[in-house]
Length: 434
Ligand SMILES: NC(=O)c1ccc[n+]([C@@H]2O[C@H](COP(=O)([O-])OP(=O)(O)OC[C@H]3O[C@@H](n4cnc5c(N)ncnc54)[C@H](O)[C@@H]3O)[C@@H](O)[C@H]2O)c1
Image (cartoon, rainbow, N blue to C red):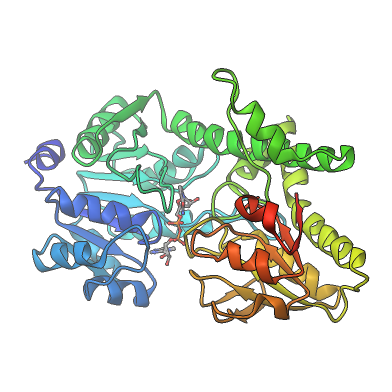
């Protein structure tokens, strides 16, 4: 049976390399579609948890994993030899930035080297990690064909398909989010499309892996730039004595030609603050600056410091100094109702407050403790007395935070998300919004 037939008959064995926020939901979707699927990850804790039927990602239920493990469709392994048996290998490894803010594709390179060690004819390899246009060709196609043994589109099939998962989104998951796909050759496209057709409702074919890589960068740059624009509007409104939330609310009543974005304490997560910089790096190499990306990055990365500044101003208005003040940061996850603190602006805000001598605690129903960028903290109990702090700084508008009690008890609230809007009229606290 050739690869295409194996895929169409669900006889193909799937290995997902990297079982994190992106890889795990995909593993579950393949198992659900009756493919024998293995999650290969370097992290033994994740694999142990998976094989024990326990989820470590909010959007995936443990019972779902346990059922697929029991039925033999899903397993986890830290042994790269599982790729020996794989027909389809999907790479979902991280693509962070280096300290210099240049792309770090070392995880992709390492994952591809692992695949090369176990490569055999009749294999599909798909990259899902977000990256700059040209990565699939430059790294996957080059490394997988370097020995001269494998012809692309004949013995080895390569494609790129960007992951679009939106953690915490109850409406759109892996299956009902259309999936963009670009194959390295028409044959690669045919094989890859046959695979994804079985696990997602809609596959959106594009002409090449480069085009598929660029689609993801347009989507995330669109968000980063619009958030940058609205953050700048927040600063302008503050100077003009206007409330940016009121302006956005009224502008949003326009039924066409406007889409609301909201200001905040800065970008967070693994995608929006990082991905556009992959493109600006690529364009710098071609001597063509990606000006919107660089400007949005400047505006967005300055927001945590602005939050620290307006907190200092609010304390000052109450005849208090930042030094020695007790400040509670409400919410440290990078967005509402999830536990992910990666690149969260809360980290920079906390560091900035501490740097100016504040005593900082945090409360987050989703994050009992965290270690990130040299900061290691444990959250306070949810029934902490809000009156015992000099100020509360709301960074993440989790639905589980008690804003009503906050506005009754706290003396000052710096609300970067407009989370206290409903209680503002009766608030005893002085509320400062962005
Ligand atoms: N998290 C999101 O919301 C999201 C959404 C869309 C796209 N993406 C993109 O998807 C990619 C993966 O992101 P993520 O959030 O799932 O990352 P993650 O850190 O949650 O998971 C990555 C996993 O890969 C494993 N890993 C790293 N190198 C490995 C190797 N060589 N062999 C085996 N396992 C390895 C790690 O142990 C980790 O478990 C990134 O490119 C990211 O930009 C993420």
